[in-house]
Image 1 (cartoon, rainbow, N blue to C red):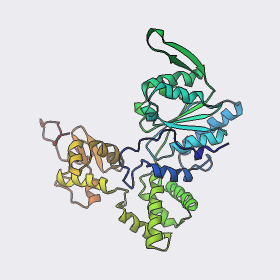
Image 2 (image 1 turned 60 degrees about the horizontal axis):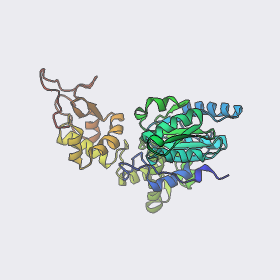
Image 3 (image 1 turned 180 degrees about the vertical axis):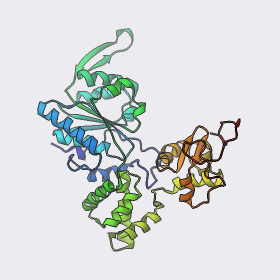
Image 4 (image 1 turned 135 degrees about the vertical axis):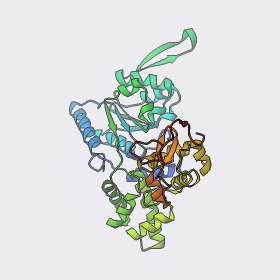
Length: 377
């Protein structure tokens, strides 16, 4: 039986924004090939996500003992945390094939019906970015998940008839980066929901050591710590930075990845000590220098750095907010005190303007002033 890890994607997920960024959590087409070689093939080899891995192991072992497919699985979390790896591991642990597609690739209900009818008993169907599946296909999926049956409509208008089509019992594994966009009926049909969390630096060091062994890279302990600290808690970013540092080590050094080599390489690739890249720092610089720390609307901020608002909002802001460098307020985006310190700029008189964020020592707001952004949103 062919291994599911060697199979191409039925429908590639749209690479989306920020593909050029060295610390973007999104994967390009070439990177998917490298990732497939680095993916773990069993829960025993999977690093991190201890709670989800333990819960999933119980679900799979119970299903194997009963001789039935496990409940449908939904994996939710930011990009690059291992949702696809876990989906492939489910098929490997069950000893079945994995069919892979993505939500945007399923445009019509007939596409999904054809895919479901080709599944063998016990197969795993993995749908990445399942929240982007077309509504007609989603409604067809309801009956397939519950009754293992789909109704194929033949004809149009008053003469149209629905032909019931029995399908083999299967397990659907859905992955989403935006669980809030899933409809209630679809979300309720998943028997197990796993929420993926960002990795700790120690876990990322384990990921890096394993990847270094597979890639044949001599990685020192302090070198792995340096890369892990700049990886934004995301294994995909850690592996990407490891490959870039490896290139630098082989060309500019003796091939060993030490702390000094990692620091020099990441400085060359514009990844600073917090994991910020050029665009992240440009957003913070514009917010701090041009707009005095804010508040400022995201559209104005995007114009200031020469990017689209969606790029700033979906690529840069999530990590900047999580790192405590930027705050979203009703009046607009505001730089925190940590952002001023990280960029090396002195705080304005009265401290950083936090725009009403709780716990901040922001500048007082004059009573009766408007709550509108200081700059257009």
